[in-house]
Image 1 (spheres, one colour):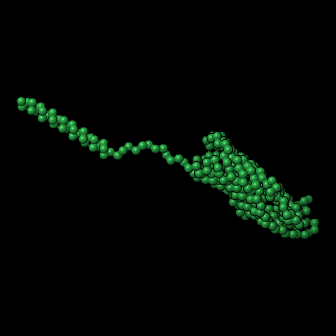
Image 2 (cartoon, rainbow, N blue to C red; image 1 turned 90 degrees about the vertical axis):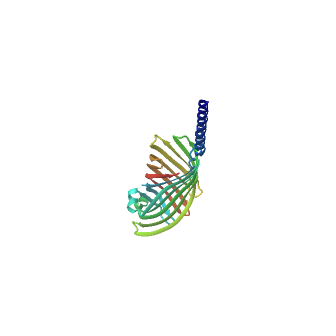
Length: 270
């Protein structure tokens, strides 16, 4: 009988111990923080901003007349000539984009002086020019194929100029001075494309045409570049650029072209 009582007490104690341990385990589980579900990272914003300061080593060539009573003067200045007389220059392209849509602004300011020679060498002239050129356009990414993309652009090119011309007629020993301030805006349409050769190198081209008689008779430009992608946010470019304009209003003629190599660096912010 005593043996049965001991067995019963052992069984009851064992059951009580197991119940106590189970209660403790349940309390630990209940006190543990719930497991948080894995969530995907927040999507990257579709907004991008980039700026490309650059140097355009352009020469100037063309015909200039600063008024109805001023002589027609031919200007032919290489970049070296311009650099010798360059007072100040600033150049940059700024682009803001959301998804397939963007706004691109190319800004150029030049303050320079250049030599000029008139017809048959009878005119010797000095041309001082302060020029601001702003090409602003809306862009739509018509093709985005990963390894290459293509933008369609439309906008305006604005010119603002202060020009001083002093010249002398060699055979007659006569000298005159002319000065004029002029500004106008030309509508333009253009196309821009880039193709990646590999993960580091790419080629890029740009072309536009405009004027259409609205302000100037015509204006157009063409650029071809090769680039190196240094990092996801920094790239370097080098190439050649040509820009021309033919404006002739109220006796003022500015029928010139600017061309030369271009070098720059692009900094992108997302």
